[in-house]
Amino acid sequence: MKQKKKLRKDRVVVTIIPLLLLIVIAGAIKNNKQDNNIYLENEVTKELYLDSNKIDNKNNMPIINTNTTTNVIEEEANEENTQIDETNQNEQQKEKKVNFDSTVAFIGDSRTQGFIMYNGLKKVQDYSYIGLMVDTAISKEFIKTNDGNKITILEDMKNKDIQKVYIMLGLNELGWSYPQVFKLKYGELIDEIRKIKPNCTIYLQSIIPVTESKDKSDKIFNNKNVDEFNKLIQELSSEKNVKYLDVKSALVDEKGFLPEEASTDGIHIDIDYCKKWLDYLKNNS
Image (tube, rainbow, N blue to C red; front, side):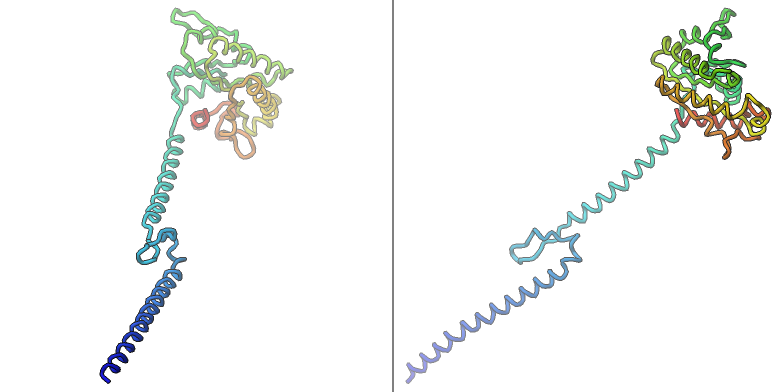
């Protein structure tokens, strides 16, 4: 009898152990599924912080990728620094001014004389003269030498280190019967400058319009003629591959006239507008 009871106890133990093992395994599986569900539910909200391709093999759970957050912050910081650099460059570009020294020459009539005087440009090569025109700019001897003689603009330029030449001519030619002759003579002046200074930069400045009162009272010095000659200058700048500077755009009013307060005679410009003229050259050449 004792032996039979012992056998029955052994059978009970053998039966219970597997059942307990099954219960433990089932509980572990259930807990694991719950843990996985928690991470799956939060996956969307943690997408910037979790790298789903990396798994902790021990716990079968995603590993937080701290590098992702760091990279995002670094990229934003780099982008901000780039924007700051671009802003600084733009500000530096605005502040960049042309140095009007002895390597810069101005060729023009009485308007250019006033421009140089009012802006105190004492170091530039002053090739301005009252009544100067595109033909006389080549031939007229008005530049004084050290020995008291007078020579032409071109003869004086030969001995100077000139890198930039600004030309404004055309006001005194508005009465010419054949505007195409103006363009022809202007082209000859450009060619002659290039012969003696092949590496210099030549700027053709637009003729500055007159005031509205002058425009209405004068048959020659009016904006219709100014516009016609400016078109010829633009054509010439393209044909000769030189730079055209639209100076008039910085000086005229909304109607396209030189403001009345800018001039006492409707043609020549006062000090304030000469400074505006200079600012335009600094920012556009």
